[in-house]
Length: 95
Image 1 (cartoon, helix red, strand yellow):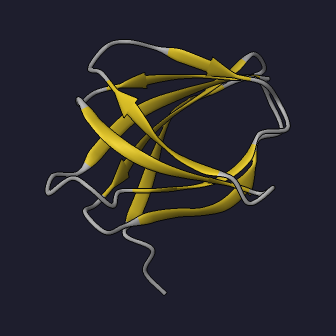
Image 2 (cartoon, helix red, strand yellow; image 1 turned 180 degrees about the horizontal axis):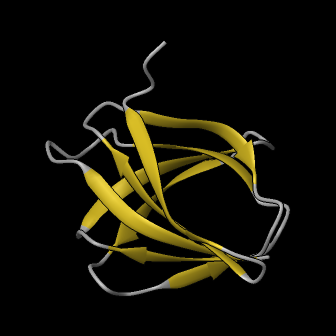
């Protein structure tokens, strides 16, 4: 089953895991839980839809090069519902 998203691990060592994510238009990163604190570095300016495990949801505005962080334990699904272009970002997990 295709989700319309894919990832490439760029670095994985004892301190960090760096992954580039691409979400195609209409694509989704299925519900998942982050085991580690992480930073996201958007490579595009776009909006992505975030559906949290608790049933809440919102549209998150991404701006190229403007990073944000989230705590370990974050549980959500991420979708590209509004952009005709892929959403691309780099995720850096502190292991």
